Image 1 (tube, rainbow, N blue to C red):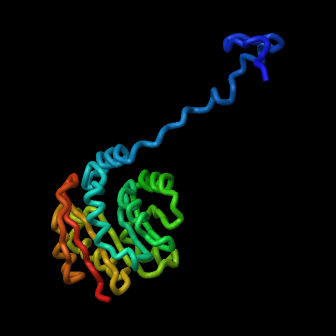
Image 2 (cartoon, rainbow, N blue to C red):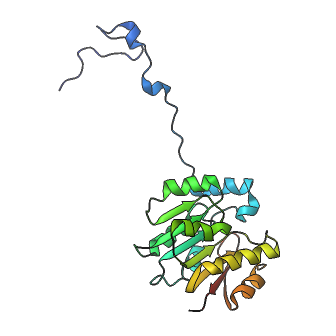
Length: 224
């Protein structure tokens, strides 16, 4: 197929084309340019500047910390996972990579920007992202008909809570776990340790230096 017999200049109507028609703007001229989504690290950093106490760090968790957290779970028996404070999903994607195809991840996130990001970026039917506090995990799971939890992971900075609020939160999370269920908490300070021990008894502790900031990881298990 050949081209037009008379090239048409963008600024002038071509032969046989009424000037009034040719000068009309196209529909695309009125469409605002699409905004590219921010990279996860930049999105996280911007959220930290707005809510530093909610996040605790200016950058997402490192791959070293993610690896240390993930190896606390027995993935062969893990089917239901709760993640408290998934942020931009750095850990969430690692959980989904290891989780059984019939598994479920329910993520509780209070930052609306992160909720939108997670829902848009992670297209996995096993993941449900709730714009809701992790303190309401019990009622939220009951509403969804989700059974007892095999793994609960939290990176929410607990040092900003009062002692009683921390105890209530940790005790409430323990009630969600199956016998043999595991809770993994990672923090930048050790202030939560007495509360974990009071609720769970034995707590296994690890330290990951290759993270900004260096982080403590605690594994708490409900007796089978």
